[in-house]
Length: 388
Image 1 (cartoon, rainbow, N blue to C red):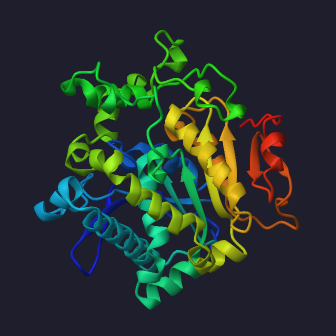
Image 2 (image 1 turned 45 degrees about the vertical axis):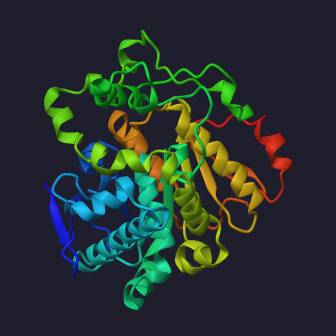
Image 3 (image 1 turned 30 degrees about the vertical axis):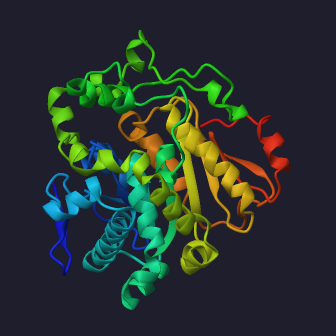
């Protein structure tokens, strides 16, 4: 069931909500921003399990998706043909509107401050999470004050490398850029490709692009066929909207936006002022996390590598990592309980100890790598098996 929150400017966002956690007045709330094509419904399998896991899960639908406001033609024109300055400004507005929406939902649902809030985006949705993080100092003072007191964690979940302005890798494609796929077939090809279980040929610990592959396996075992092929037609219809892609998401995904996205990532992740401004996240929260998976698309693994290297270059701005062994791009559908456990592991818990800033620590069946203060760790990391 969808709820709606409407901003003062008339922009409306629909969202799904797992509801309050029973017998816990201090539960944390996880806000989720979805990716390309697959909207908030993709996360619905989390909802029946969320309360038992001690979480409230709220999944926002971005504009153009599943009842959220459409863009007017003049804004769509900026996405498609605007100048770099116009596109950057419009992207900044999206982060501001999402931040205002999150703040409005915090207030309207009286979400507990004690449990706080984690912000997470999946796949292309991370463009908009970074816009939210970078927009903090542009928000009205009351909104900014609430968000920095409530938000304790930000999670970059399976982001593709273009989100950070990384140039396309040579010899590694995506269906939208594959010249062998006819234009009329690209939407279906993308859905199948992005939900595949990949068998990358090389040693992923080397961070060498030659270890990655673009094509999905041709004859996978039945339990490793693309997630979308194991959905019923009704399930597919309940999680997909292909219309927004050619209207604006496709344009954000490709090189004309690279400089804009690189600058946004720099502000959101590596600007000292921005990071310090998120007070609870910076001082006593779960902090900033990146999650990627070993059976995911090549560009999400590449993004994880890029962020690990960036984090080592910014030792005063910590970022933690979880690397999920054997998971594809749809963990929240394939194994929702594991997904909830992974997300909750990113959040602060009452404990006398916290992950050391000078060690690679194991948490349950997953490794959380807290990036150290020296590139010496680059060599050490290659010898560590990181499983989830």
